[in-house]
Length: 428
Image 1 (tube, rainbow, N blue to C red):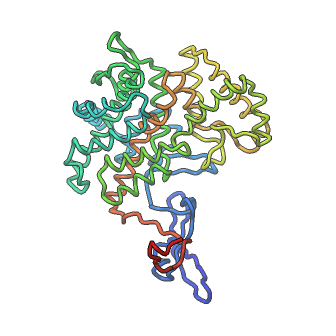
Image 2: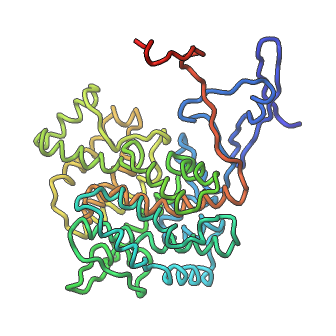
Image 3: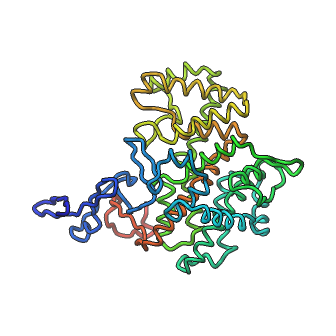
């Protein structure tokens, strides 16, 4: 017999079905509640409300579990490339060797951006924020590919739109980095794989040959994989709700970039670096004082603990190793990184942090790696978007395939009740 939940309103009781997921998560289906009772539920920020039934990503914050399509994040980060994981998220299964070769070949064919898009890019003011540039350029792609405006066209046309966006995203991100430095833009080179090509366009120069370091390529692959999807977070749910209006893919992803831009979401690793700079410049590098003030609740430390993970962030365990490898290989000598290592040691050994499970999270380590590689702090969120892109597209694609209803949250009105209109001469 199917499990039911009962809600009692006055003298009336209503039975509501209970949905059970494949990982035994349970949810009360309230989709017919308003129709039967005239009452809605209230859940500010949707923290306890499931907005969809999805088969893409499973996350268990209490147990510290993250899986894409059933595969553990640990296995994917250790054994797969970012393009393999992108294929998995988009199409549901890991690719065969033939499928992966074909997929990567399609991406290679579409890495160039239209020269007129370059003209749009060139008029951005010097010093404009990278995320503003990224959001504009992604949205503008719909103007260069008008056939993408109708997402209800053939599956072949939809897949071409997906391939184009995935292929052009590294090119656009590298363009933004180069503009920030005042350097000439490098065109993609088909001899490189997806991640190596991005590193070449970002850190190469027209004046010399660039060979991506395998340790750096491995670390970047892992960072992108770890950020590829994270269930129904702020930016992902934004992509889905915009997509539910049948907006095109470029517009929907542009909206996701806008949501990610906020410091409460994608800006977290930027906040980590700004915190480290504050400790270096204002606190004169006195980490012991900073830790003591944090324990006395006199200051907030960024990059420790997680809203969802109540145990160790599984992504942090993986990226910590990559972080150590990158720092050792590059031989970086930066006071900020020394402060970060001292903070990490305190968080991993001090009983105050251990008992409260305030471990370093993925944002703590990713910021350190990006800093060591030479990315300016405002670029960090752009790199987050580069990694999250296949997840966003997969969520948008799933929504479209299921033909879900347009998103339309309810509210509890708490303003004025009806009042008469007062003509302007009688208003005080």
